[in-house]
Amino acid sequence: MNPDGRRKRWAIRAFGLILLLLIAAGVLFTRFHHGKDSAASVPSAEVKLGDFADYVELRGEIRVRSSTVISAPYNAGDLQILKLARSGSQVKKGDVAVEFDPSTLQRAAEQARSTLKQVEAEIARANAQQRLAEEQLLTETMSAKFALERAQLDASTREVIPAIEHEKNVLALEKAEQKLKELDAKKASRLVGTEADLAGILRRQKKAQADLDQAERNMAALTLTSPIDGIITLLTNSRARTSIVGGSSPVFKEGDRAYAGAAIAEIPDLSTIQANAPVSEADRGRVRPGQPAVLKIEAVPDKEHKGQVTEISPLAKLDYSGYPVTKNFDLTVKLENPDARLRPGMTAAFRVEVERIPASIVIPAGAIFEKGGKTVAYVLSDGAYRERAVAIARRSMGQVMVSGGLKPGDKIALKDPTIEESK
Image 1 (cartoon, rainbow, N blue to C red):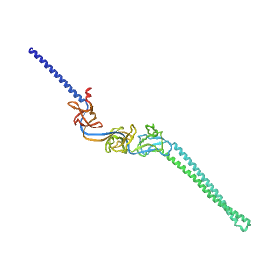
Image 2 (tube, rainbow, N blue to C red; image 1 turned 90 degrees about the vertical axis):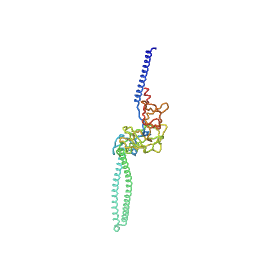
Image 3 (cartoon, helix red, strand yellow; image 1 turned 180 degrees about the horizontal axis):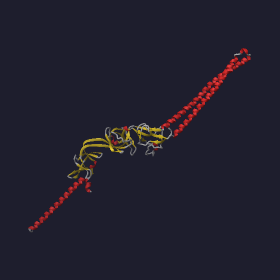
C-alpha cells in the first residue's frame, strides 16, 4: 500500500475518534445540566440542629368555670315561653331574658281576688249584723233595767198596800232581776258566737289574701331578668329531644313549655374562661400539669392561643359516643391573655407539648421516604439527589428526629426526586 493511502486511512480514523469524543462530551454535558435542572426543581430543606418537640393532639372546647343560670320559677303552674332573648346576644343587668305566658296565673289571681272580695263582703255583713244585734240587746237591757227599777219601787210600798199586792210586787221584782241576768248571759253568749264566726271569716280572708299575694308573686316571677351584664347562652330543652336513643336536644325557643325549675339560659363569667379536652388512656401518662399548650380555635382562626395545662381529672369518664366504649380523662388548659372573642362552646384543636429534646437533628416529616423496606432520604450531592438510608429516633407532628444518616447542613429533598425524573 502506498504511503498516501495509509495516511488517508489514519486521517479518517482520527476524525472518527474525535467525532465520537465530541458526541460523548455533549451527552455528558447535557446529562449534567439536566441533573442540575432536575435538582433545582425539587423542593428542599436544610438539615438543622435544634429542639425536637413531641406533642399530643386533642380536640375539645372552650368553657367557663362559673356562670349564672336563669331558671324557670317554681309553683307557677303551666309555663310556656312567650319571649326569649337570642342566644349569643349581649344583655345588661335588669334586661328581660325570659318571659312566660301569664294567662293561667292571671286567671288564678282573678279568682283569688274575687274570693277575697266575697270574704270582705261577708266580714262587712257580719260586722253590720253584730252591731244590729248589740243595739237590739242594748235596748232590751235598758227595758229590763227600767222594769227592775219599777219593780223595786213597787216592792218598797209594803206598808201602804195589802199583803197580796206586796207578794205580787216581790214576784215581779224577782222576774225583772232574772230577766236582766238572762240578757247579760245572752249578751256574753252572743259575743262569743259572733267572735267565733268572725274569726272563721277572718281566717278565710287571710287565706284568700295569701292566695292573691302568691299569685301576684308568681306572675312577677314569670318575667326573668338578667342578674349581671354578659352574653346569654340558651340551654338545651331535654323534653324536646328528637329521639329517646341517641337523639339530640335542641335549645329552648319561644313557644316551648318548661317544667318548674328548668334551666333556660345561662350567662357565663368570661373572666373564668378556660379550655377543656378529653385525654385517652394511651396519652394520659404523657400529659401532666404545667406543660405548654397551643390552641387553634375554629371560630377565631386568625391567631394561635397559648395556655398551660392546669389540671387533669384523676378519674376517667366513659365515652359512649362510639363503639367500643372508651375511657377519657378531662384536661383543663388555662389560657394566657384570652381573646375577647372567645365564647363557651367554641371548638378547639389542642397541641400539648409533652417533651422537648435539645440539640437534636430535626427534619420535616415530608423528607422521609420508604423504599425497598428501608427508610431513606435524598441528599443533594454533586448537583443531584442521592438516596441515603437514615435512622429515625422519634416522630412528632410534622417533624422527625434523626439518629443517623444525616448531619447538620445537608440539603434534603422534600419530594421524591426519582418520581420527578421519571416524568
